Length: 329
Image 1 (cartoon, rainbow, N blue to C red):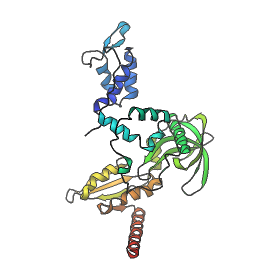
Image 2 (image 1 turned 60 degrees about the vertical axis):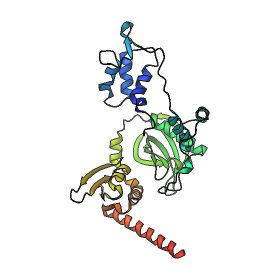
Image 3 (image 1 turned 180 degrees about the horizontal axis):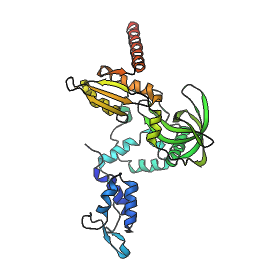
Image 4 (image 1 turned 90 degrees about the vertical axis):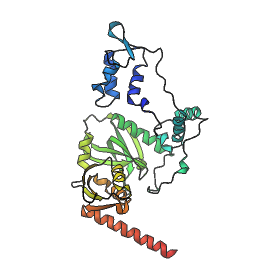
């Protein structure tokens, strides 16, 4: 069951935005569709909005070839009780404070004061997540996160001081490119370029929780960036080769877990098993290995050998800990 109806999707938002004004024009319609829609939306959506025979009848022609909305008022989005319950539940998630200020959250909480949440956070228990997650309640963390988010959106150059994963204090000027949330770690991180005299020196990843100080330099990173080229430069030279069985719905779970990864999949028609070539960021190898091990006997790591050996060592270590725990009992 979908909580939010598809009628409030991208096309509804585009049409609603255009209908906010009593009068608009064809240029505004096309620009809005190109900016707010999908890549192929511009091929057919303007024809549905601009009067011309097969349109949706939302506008009529006015003087000087303008477009006048046929409604007296702009569209109103109506929320169902189920949608309100879902929103109330989301307000209890501390991560929402990263994207909304306290005043907005108080206003939303007041509007939903008579609504029961669809679920409560204490009803969930995560068994495959690290315990040292980011402190989303910390005011300094929230401040740093919002500066990072603004820098990513506008490609601002920022000065950052942080502590690396090895405990080393580091600093420098960075161009922040993309933010990412890791469900396994329950942490936010940012992909970036380290700059030296406004030139790219190297690429890297900084965990938001490790930032001790961040300052907006007021300057912008003007060099065009292709995220595809950025990630290809960090990609492993040879993929991880994983054999996946159909047991316990293994194939579907595996594809869902690694949906964002570049991969090539081959199915064995006789056994029904799948062989997946998985390309990954070399700096994320440990996290990927942990995610692979969570599938247990459903998968087998075939290559590269160093990844297979790491998996073997972790499994042996886990077996030792389990045996020790049994002896203590």
